[in-house]
Length: 529
Image (cartoon, rainbow, N blue to C red; front, side, top):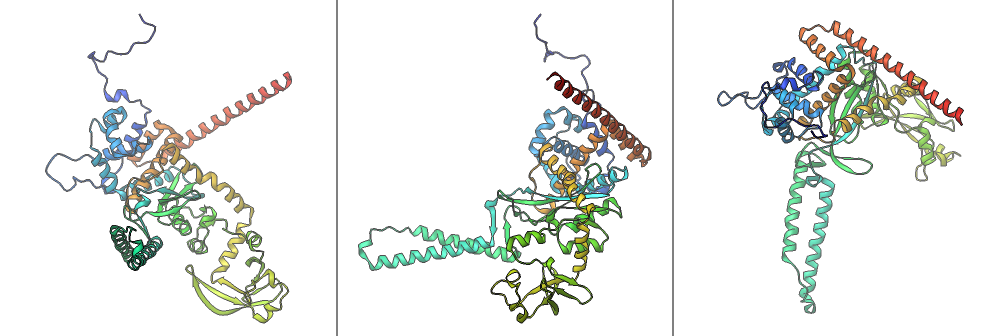
């Protein structure tokens, strides 16, 4: 008898071979996926399949089967349809989920590609479920965005400015060729210089293609266009530029669940505060909801929209008066006092800037213009701190709804607002970190905004799904699925609250023991020394 353990004989026939169900543990995540997907109303989700309109041939794969495959794959960093096809044939958990069926990679890929709206509904319904079982409160919601690579290369990108520069360069090169030809015709001594006719032909072909690219941009009304993915845009990061989409999320403070998500085509967040706030409010249905975001979301237009919709926001301004003063050594706007009753500004030298009744539009805002006469400004002793040498008089601009921003600035200086701003990072940075590292997601596999919205919703649903399982466990989750099917969440909501409370007490208890033992160890070490 050897000293090592012996495995089963691969050629031995078992009298009672184990079933697939026996090979899957009761607390296996595959059982949680199966329990949840089985209670979904597929007809309500309006999921499409290639076989939905075909009556002859073999039966189609059920949409629930394909959805289970994708949820399992995204939970385990397997997103490629070809890799999922391979896993179905060798992974016991997927064999159990699919009940031995083996859809091809094309069938798997088409499901994700053809059902973006259904995937968004699945994510939204799960967020509403989390709110119904009181795991989402909506008291404090954090908003953030991340640039995630598109399934497109920068090599297929057309940029108007670059095309125009290339055209100018080609015209210059062709002109140089023509001038050189004239020189050779006049000077026989340089007849040994060889010119390639193909070079000129290539330049002309390239010029023709650039004109086509320019015409395409003009017809689309765009400054840039990617031939691989028409909706992807170049977005700038500190280290590099990339073809990407701007993925937006709104995260609840209580258990860090993602409430809402969206895709922006812009390389900034200035137009997303109101959009994400409205999506969040629709889910949480909490009149007292507070939304916080970083300074990249600060926009007076967006803040006014939120005020009009009675949504409280906490967003720090992008540039403070102190920063601006240090930068250019000139008086900032905050050092000019506005008098609401007289509708005028008072400068640091106590001179009045009156409303000139002139208005002009800038960045979707109508601005009133306030001016001081050039006579007063020229003789002012503070002119070097106020105006440049080429400027004769002071001119200021005030948005017609500036009073809203004045009140907002006052609110942002309160201790409550400052504490929320400090807390923002701990709310909203966590999900993106988990999605990128734990779930291994950093780029989209589908193309166009419509399809990207679907894949984005799928990954956000996957994050919430895993977080819920980590929070309440698979056994309680399966009980939750039964309660959803029976349309009665009262008892299971109480069970979840009690479970989380007990787990929290255990954690506090063991933390106290750990801290006690750690202090005891330190004191013992100190006494020995």
